[in-house]
Length: 373
Image (cartoon, rainbow, N blue to C red; front, side, top):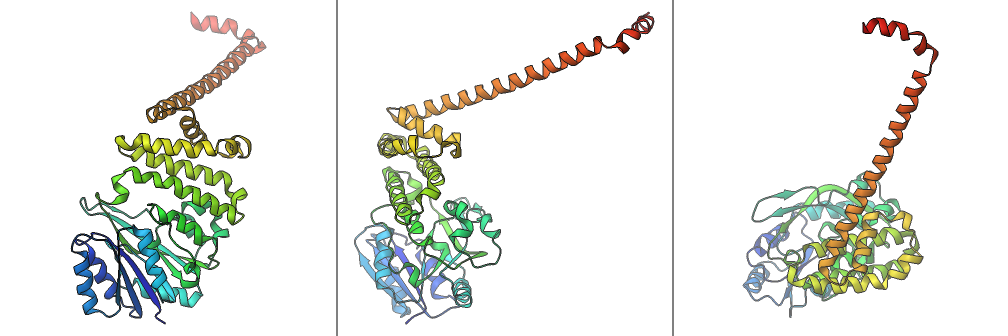
C-alpha cells in the first residue's frame, strides 16, 4: 500500500496546473500516489495531465463530467489507496518538503489529523495574507496532541479548507464531501473533527493558495445560497453527534455570520434569490430562537440580523432594518451616557451645596470679601 494519496480536482486551470503538479511530483517524500480528477475541463488541462502522467507513473487520472470539487474529491477518495490522505486544489502549490514534514509528524505521534497554516496570495495584486489560518487559539494548546474538546469554544473558528489538513486514512475513509454545492468543505470539516482523537497543529506555512477573481467563490453568484444548505447539514451533524445542546448558541451566531456575510457580497441581481432562501431558513428556526436559545448568550449584532431578515419582505429592507437597529442602539447608548452625566452633575451640585453649607465656608466668608476688595 502506498503511504500518501494526494487528491487534486482539476477544472479549467491550464494557466496554473503545471505549478501545482510540479509542487507534488517534486516532493521530497516519494511514496505517494497522485490522483487527478479532470472534472469536465474544456481548456488544455486534460492535455497537461496526460503529459505529466506519461512522465510519472505515480499519477492517475479520473475523468468525469463537471460536477464540482466535492464530487471530484469523492471520486478520488473512492479510488485512493494511501495510508494518509492529502487534498489540494489545482491552482495552488505545496512546499516541496510539506508531505515529508506532515508524514513524519503523523507517524511519530500516531496522529489522526495535522492542521497547518496556509498563505493566501492574490495573483493580480501580489497581496499576501499571512493571518488567514493563524488560529491563535490552537497555539495556546502548545505542542501537545489534542482533540476538539481542547478547543471546543473555538471549534467553529478553524479554517475549514481541506488543503491545510493532513488526514490519517481511517479518519476520512467513510466520509464524503457534499456534492453539487460550494462551501462543501465547511460540512466536511464538521463530519470529521469530532472523530479526530489525536490532532496536532503545525505552526508553519506549507500551502500557498491563489486568490483568483474568476473563481466560483469570488464570483458571488446564486451558488452562494449553497451556504444555507451547508449549514442545515452542519446543524444535523451536531444533532447526530449529540453535541447540539452544548454548541447551540455558538452555532446559531456562526450561521448568522456566514449567511449574512455572503448576502453582503452577492451580486445585486442575485440578492432577492439569496434573501428568499435566507429568510426561509431563518423562519424555520424562529420557534427555536424564541423558546430554546439562551438569548442572553447571543450578541445583539446577531439578534438584529436575524430579526431584520424575519421582519422584512424584500432584500432591500434588510439593510434598512439593520440601520434602524444601529441607530436605536446608538440612541440607547447616548441616553445611557446622558443619564450618567446627569448623575455626575447632580453629585457635583450636592457636593457644592454641602461645601456652601459647611462651617469652614461660613467662617472664611469675611476673608473672601477682603480678598475680593
